[in-house]
Image 1 (cartoon, rainbow, N blue to C red):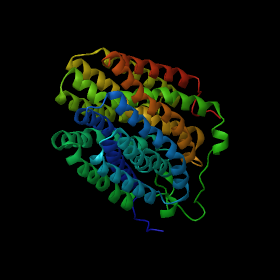
Image 2 (cartoon, one colour):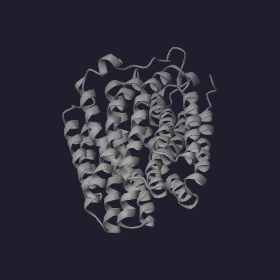
Image 3 (cartoon, rainbow, N blue to C red):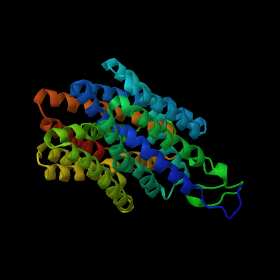
Image 4 (tube, one colour):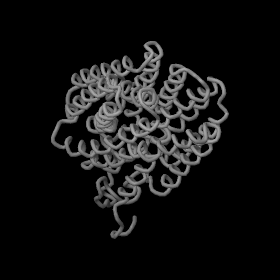
Length: 405
């Protein structure tokens, strides 16, 4: 056990989580919309065909989260994240050789495995282990990396692909992914507080105080009404959100120009950061599920507004409102699961939730892309996304409180 003067390592865990998610989202999640536009521009592929590859990416990511969760529960999470970094880097490096649509599906399959192993699932698992009473604030800090990635990293990779093309930019993307994830993971992403002589939230542990995690077993959790309503609600909420994000760059470019499209990704991420910290305070006074319903309603309205706007100012206003919901919607899923079911089986319960909700994550880009090609524009796409989000809000309202027994 370390000396009594040592600072609580949970702070370093948050730093590692923040940095890791910054690059995982900036090159991964937000980057997919940039890749969609790049492949459409350089290879002349339709939006629907590339959107189907994005759908496939999220399906692979969702399915692979189940075995990855088992590994996270059993082994040191750092090695799982590092393996994911190798897979993701390899996939990004081979993106330069994509000339056929099936090549893209193959690359995205490997990329999805790497993204799932080095992204939100493993990170939120570690954060929930290190923080209990301060969990909402800790997850807000860690998940802010998701938005910072959109502000800092995604514009860089868009500039790389715009200036160098996919062939010349692919090695740079691979290097950014690897360097951004591996060092900080190995140095600071400590798996458990008790292994370093601490209890959650910063209290010192003695040999008699080290506790085993408490919570609801997986088999009980997955049969509850709360689990079902939240999981299905997130199919529609995430489908609307991810579809809206992944088509955003191309949609704004079609209606305005490349500069506004780049600014749109920055505005989206910036307001996501601001709203997430505001939410970490709000949910201390407002019941978590009620807050989630409000976020889903706001997301639906903002997506509909984006669908109706054609001017740069109108689009940026809609994107700002949409950004206020993005980080909070993702953060609330982790908080709801941890609050209702505890830490005992959190990675496996979260993975089951993710597998179900990822059907929406995967279907959203496909739906919006197909509607774009059918209608010849994005208005119907974003109006449909708004309707999906509102339906998700309705399902959340049937789940009950996150604090119920």
